[in-house]
Image 1 (cartoon, one colour):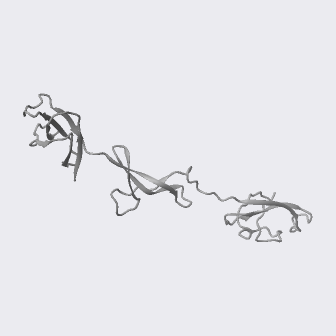
Image 2: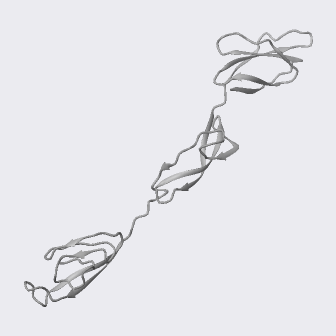
Image 3: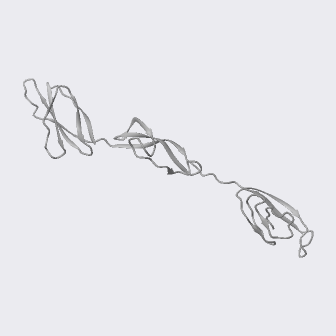
Amino acid sequence: MAYSKTLNWVGSAASYEVSWSVKDTNAYTTPVIVTGTTYVVTGLEDGTEYDVRIVGVCLNTAKSPTPLTGIMRPDVITWQGEDPVCLLNSGYVFYQNRRRYIDGVATSYVETNSFTGGLSTFIPPFSDPTACPIPTIVVNCETYVTSYNGPADYPNTATFTYSQCFGTPATVMINKGSSYTICGLIDSFKSIDPGVTTVGQGFCFQ
């Protein structure tokens, strides 16, 4: 792929001879005669630097003993994402569009950040849980105190504390005489204590 460069200089000569060469080879092209102080060099090989030489020519055809010199370099093209959005419940940010930069300066060219088409490659999503937090499930539990008629090995007046909890479904086997914290959909639990009359509810025994 070729690139071009616009040369601008200051001078008052009648005309100028502009030539260029692959950097450090001293193999200059045949000079191009230019009557102004600007010239567009085309057909430069991408990724290659060139030495440029500009010689002023007077009306009497005398040439400047000290030519103007410089280096032509290919543009450094980069892309940056724009218009970020959060991917649903993932903690990742995705850029909807991408803008072209030349030598670090933003241009007006913007294209859709897609896998196919366009001048640039796809800019993938990146993790940023601060900008796009992953939602957490909040479990709300209400604690109650109840009494029930226990089996033969419990006093009939025994009092137990249990919690009805709503949130992520779970299955918890409850052993009498132990303490549990149960968070899950009510009716998603099974008690193995035969003294519990409301089998199927969530309980936290103490």
